[in-house]
Length: 138
Image (cartoon, rainbow, N blue to C red; front, side):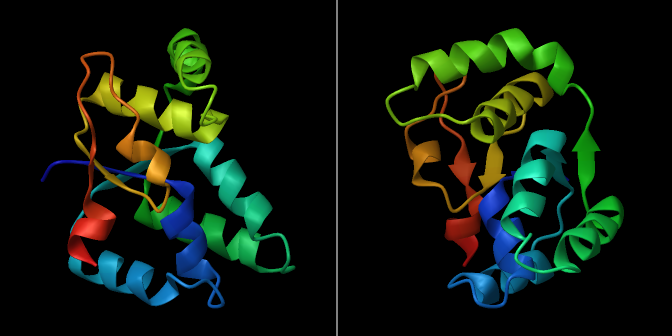
């Protein structure tokens, strides 16, 4: 199975029942086999957005440890991440977005699950758009 990169939005929606896309996130994960790949920048952003609850950040991390492949190459991607952030500074491209795009380039991932419309604009170094499978399948 091809890997699918997962951005912050679907992960927050999965754990925050008040999120508008909660049902779509649950349905997406139930019918999409994965594997799902993300990185520490995305995990950090998710836990920060779930900090309105005392227990959700830890629950999310326990789930993530079992359900996600957490890529460990972000440190090697820093020059590329900086270049992406510079190129898309008008959107802006934050660390999580830029690091996820760099991860996709390095791992040759073509599909992403995101709620972020910026990924419609982002292009890999080879000028290829990622396919947002979250919206394709929800």
